[in-house]
Length: 193
Image (cartoon, rainbow, N blue to C red; front, side):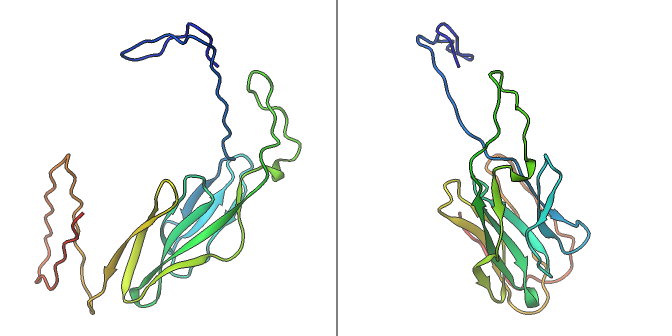
């Protein structure tokens, strides 16, 4: 809440003429992570308040990367398939009822009678296959802020063993990539964007 006369910070410190108040609701915190670091990893969800961990995936080849939407109700992840191919899956979360946690006037949380029933998104059920990439690797899924679009990187295999060298170019920096490898360039691709 802001009382009349409160001033904004910054270049133009205008005063508030009338009282103003805002309210909003945040979701129950969860932490998604990949484990273990030294082998094929799977996706886990940690409740930081109770310490409870939930395994979300069971992929033999491991989860490579993941991204969640802004609400935390959908998780997209890439997995390594057979013969080097890759696929992208989606986990749909179910939103539990809104918070029954109460706070006093100062905002301090009152005692929670049943922490196991804390509100938030829970993930149950089988993941949904979003795209299969045969003879290609599909990685780095990124969901748009609105949740309408999914972007990912698809790299086709040309057959045989190959070393991929890629460069990310930024308009704010100059990159020089040296590759001390012997061999010949068998295929070169440029993706404008």
